[in-house]
Amino acid sequence: MVRSPLFVVADGMGGAQAGEVASHLAAEAFRGGLPDAAQPEAALADVVQEANARIHELSHANAEQAGMGTTLTAIYVGEREVAIAHVGDSRAYCLRDGQLLRLTDDHSLVDELMRQGRLTPEEAVEHPQRSVITRALGIEGTVEVDTRSFKGLAGDVYLICSDGLTTMVSEQQIAEVLRRSARLRDAGEALIAAANEAGGRDNITVVLLRLEDVGGDGAVAEQATLTGIPAARDATATESAEPLAPVAQTPAPGEPPTAAHAIPRAARRPRSPAARVPARRRRLSARRAGVLAASLAVLALIAAGAFLALQSVYFIGTNDRGLVTLYQGLPFTLPGHIELFSSQYVSGVSASTVSPQRRRTLLDHSLRSEGKAASLIRSLELDQLE
Image (cartoon, rainbow, N blue to C red):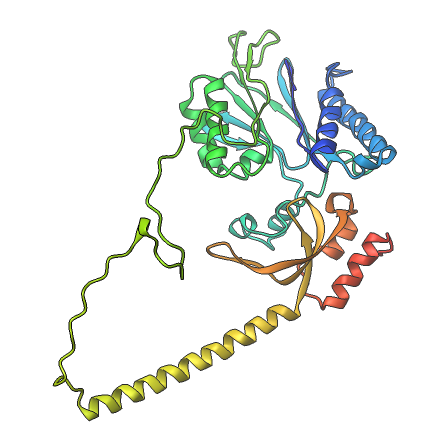
């Protein structure tokens, strides 16, 4: 929602329709502005709690919308200060004097693990539970809201965005786009294009605004001009993309080449009957072949042992839709996107509906036996998990 001096981004979850309902309710709560602009932090938090109550009530009244929720990040520009309210993994940034400052903390499992020093940023990128958020509107009757205020300066550029941008575009790239774009609309379109070019796996929402000084002292004046672009959503590649030109194809491994990509072969030279390998060379070759065969056998045994080990351990995580899932193997992804785990069972429970204490019990990277892991998920589904 963009209605100066209030700017809001809400990114719904819980299925396409339910998530859209939740984000719409969150944005609608701000349509009337703030009840008390003299205390913007408290006023923002009150509106967020009101939106949370509406979403929570509706999710319990309608089975089709059970478990729905939404993130929310809001910026209010006052006479002298800028106030922020935040829940979830959408983000707010400020570009000031060419430096990009992150103004919010993600309420996600991987960010909590990074803050505890149990996970590196590189590991977080490929973590199987990177989609799990630990705080959202609508999950419980009340929600903890992060709020902060700080002095705004003329020339500040503020960005509010969903994780559809930040999971695909690095902060360094975001800063570069904002620095080189004179117009906010150009910057917003460039950020969305960059996210789509990187894969565009989720909805991308971007809101940009710039503070301009009209008071002469560098502060945010009451009549400050705020330039913004509407929340732009795009989950697919742009429709104006040019069609791909045909390219030469290479046959898949083991596939016989067709006439379209036949592989030319060099003519074989007939072997002379007189060309014979000396007996000593043959014995050396046989010995080397024996050593190679033994080495390959050892490697095969090691690989077989590792494979059996992967088949005997299980852990509990979430799938791409945020549902609690039983995985077989280890919770790691090797370079080249080689996953050491596979999904065995998907529950009907969204991780966002599980209390923080229960999430710590389930999603702590513990390797378990199949029976123990399955028992935990059954207890969760029956609401009997302690």
